[in-house]
Image (cartoon, rainbow, N blue to C red; front, side, top):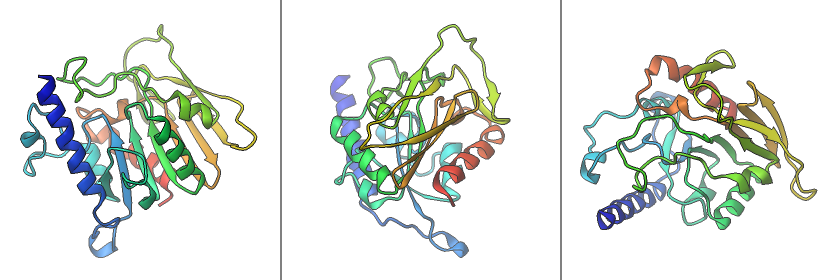
Length: 247
């Protein structure tokens, strides 16, 4: 089982590298080329959950509603790593959706990219509620608890979780669905690395100006649940993307 999982992870890594090395812009029909949007996630957005890599990459399989929604405006570029080799420097926009823990080098690269003008939408959920068929320990399983304290601290944010909050979806900011959401707080930043973050929606959302870049953080990822009715997710996702990426 471990050997099969390693082969699957290696296959996805190789495929992500091929996609990331493709053109930064894709044809967008009559409206011209769509801007590229880097995507790093453990949630089944670009590839669906499947026991085999063949089924996962089946071109005839239905796409997730999140991918369909994003591809209306952007050319998605899956990323496996956040560094020069992974293609980060060729992008202006990035979506991190419940990503794996970043390495020290990736934290440095991401911080530099943002401060140089990059625009990031980050979903960081301290207690992911979406169901998955993968068991704990399976490398294909979505990240249950986000582990991004180093980069959040660098940007003047902390993420906490109230274990006593009731389970169940609720709306914040009018139409943003959350479930067992985290709470963000601001922290002092280093004098040589300033960041200005404002907290909104009951401290579930942070909007940060960091150097020349912008970061919108959502302390929950229930919006991205593959099982969600698109009618309840498309509009809030579009609003967040427009806010972060400035169409």
